[in-house]
Length: 145
Image (cartoon, rainbow, N blue to C red; front, top):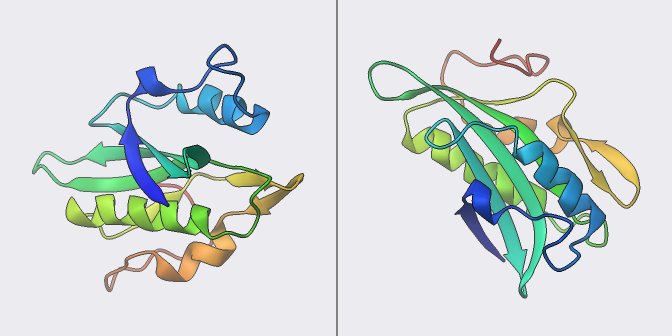
């Protein structure tokens, strides 16, 4: 499994070799993210196939650190449920926030992702791993705003 950041120009479209429908839908949502350094698009690839994508929005403070990191988009290959790839992408996003001196990663309200035809809540399995300091984000607080 390989995780990397991509540019908006590398996003998938219905004309780019007929990608999976979940990937086209996720790409449409990822296009709404701001350009770097305010937004990041992460992809997890395995054996040359995209298994999951994540869209991260960063709000920078005047002192050069990230004051808020919010996961806005998560998309996963429904043919590969429960592989842990989404969790790995979230950990990678946490790492980006941590390196930029941000102690929390927020989840956009209502965020979920599709796997095997059902929508799974992204908060449950990752909530305990979000970096925190003494100022902890309550589990029910899912947005910076």
